[in-house]
Image 1 (tube, rainbow, N blue to C red):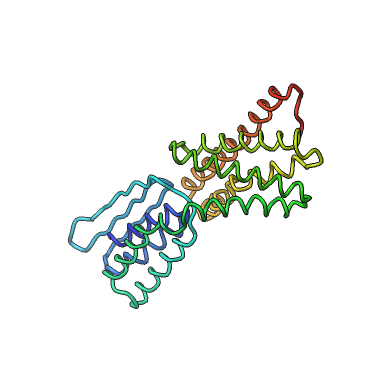
Image 2: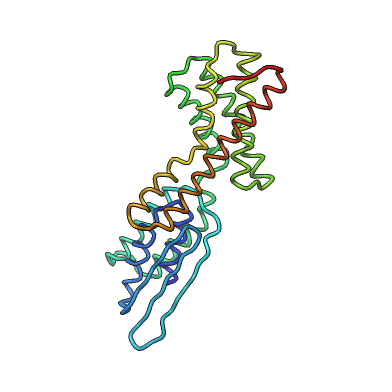
Length: 255
């Protein structure tokens, strides 16, 4: 049960779909040959029960506090689960490898690597949207602002919604300043849209739909609400940034 719950917690914190978390925990717990196995995964909680014949059931409830997106960890947990179920790995070895994944999760990517990837993502979308060289340069500058706000937000421990709003305000303000005073021929729409792409909850929406189609309506609804809050925070931030820029410049800014 400890191994199954640890695997489920790692997957849930890494952004795995609900049915995948439940399926992985169930496969691991079947190695116990218990008469009754129940696994339930929710967005912020895991509930697992195991009962052997003639004994009281053993139940574990685990609260999942932090969630993000790390497909690498999900793949590793799946591989460990398959090896364990295929008798290529002992239970003790599987648990030890899962603990190693949990402890090293924060060291998978250095902060500079993550922020560099964010910057390159913004530049890449500027190219993808057909931007000119000015748009690409503007996207790089806006991406640098996004990286700076992300680092500041982590240092000050902003919550996710306020972090997205702050980043969106910075993106909008910097894009408008560049358009108004530096690159007059720059396409402001391309630059701002490229800047907010790292903030768009695309995978979260996809997982919400997949959970709903698999019949996990509670988790699906929770994920949809979470994705909607992220999208709304980005939209509010861009709107506030435009209003602030209009007040500072003294004229109405239109995208």
